[in-house]
Image 1 (cartoon, rainbow, N blue to C red):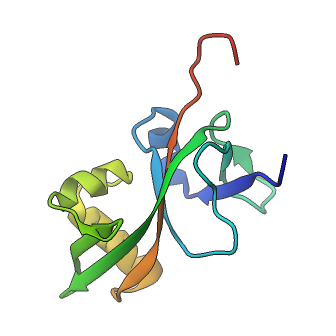
Image 2 (tube, rainbow, N blue to C red):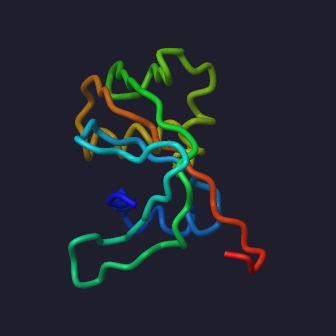
Length: 132
């Protein structure tokens, strides 16, 4: 078993992950992302004293290239797997935001309103049937 891939999340996303409402994350390219079929670790406050695991390790189901474009400080185009999405609000909700404007504001604050290329990692929660 190789090194397990871990992702850190801000507190605002923790309840959504716990409730199974957020099952994806958008990340910059890095040396090693999760691969489909691998368990992944989801943390709040990684590399801090208050680090905590959010949920039992989910399994990565997909990793796809993503491109996010802005026009006048608002996300106006998202491509996943090089295919433009038709419903940007639905993607924003799946990513843990109230709507596209909420996601746009978060991205402006954390990444700036410039073109972003990265990956979207999707996961599924382990079944809670006592057979874990």
